[in-house]
Length: 226
Image (cartoon, rainbow, N blue to C red; front, side):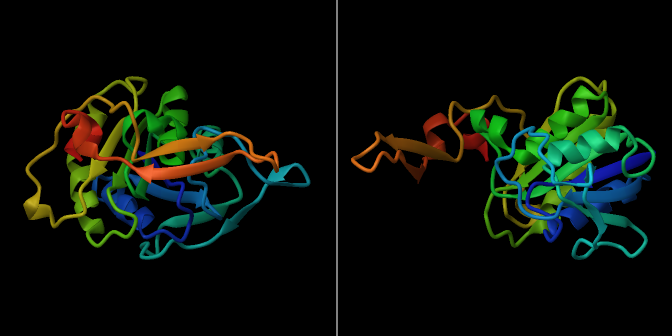
């Protein structure tokens, strides 16, 4: 069995090695292929940078990755990376796609904009089981906790049909012993932030302001439980 590990934070994120270790421990042959630069907010875009009609792919090691794991930086959005993998762009077609570990939450209806979730969605449309994993802070201290949760969830994912949908995990940035279990939750009506739009001014520009939202406003949702 073969697993692709990707993300939207880019090849230099420590979260890639966390998921690579999860897949390897479960018996998968692992290949890492992640964007050469950050693609947060790319959703399921198939955007890529071509050179002479080819997407640019370079061998580059993700930080903390085991020496025996193939690792590539790809000049493409994460969903395109998954698309390429489905057609054997990085070796044999993967049986599993793990996307993340993302810095920051992917909750609520805002998941439609997430490059992390977009990569997993792309995989599912090609009949490949997929899981997106996020840790709920921009500057994680407990990467290993995301690995513990992902390892538990992988068994559940493997028991599902490949096209049953994306498994989207949001993990608190806490030591693993402080977790109280895994909860299934509906999507919140919002994401981690709210956008406020100012109409065009004299200069013709539309101004966008972002503000963090209180997740307890929808306590039973994925955002509230996270």
